Image (cartoon, rainbow, N blue to C red):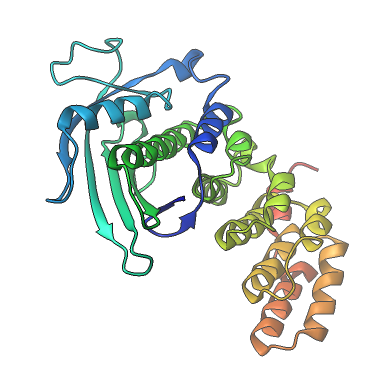
Length: 310
């Protein structure tokens, strides 16, 4: 059994799902127009940190295959004669190490791929740049290191491609990534929506955000609620309220804020009910603050967005 996750949170993704994610998110318009930009990646450093390791030739082959899933990247050999001869050259490094797992006597594989951010995207791509770490967990038993490293590298390449596509606001990329089954891609996209609520792609995503509220990964649900408050309007309030988990205090706190931002009679009615019936003092206070906002003591984000357009 395989499980993959970033260094911060778990998710499950088999190799077949990785390929599906690549085709879904990056397939149709990857090399048309502006999307034809391809960055050459030169792998300068490979470090196994003194543990079990593969030959340098094998690791380079793994990275080359993984970058084949990412249309914006290709491997440039050290003599720089390979590839299509265009695009900025980006220096990269790959670190991997085996970590014993005392719980189930298995073996975890920590893999980090760091690629220099392209000059044109450095200001847009975020503080993490193109630096991603994956923790691949394996149960006890025989383990093939090269297979696991390939699986981890495939996922690293897809995450890096998604960061580039979001930074470039590639047409339809937000909608495509929001269909992913990979929680990390969903979290990344939802964070982008949170940070770019005025972008047309973000504004058109409210319906899909409502569907993601019930996602198994709690981070996805919380970010979806927050995003609805930023990009949704009064017509989206009921979609949020029918999916929020009423027993989840974290979701409810964000729901109060989100529906207040969306505004409208449904929001006001819900917040009046919540302010009267919340059992927890902190929850009641949050509901009251949100109610004051929706009653007009401060404008909702929806009202701010639409002033001057009526």
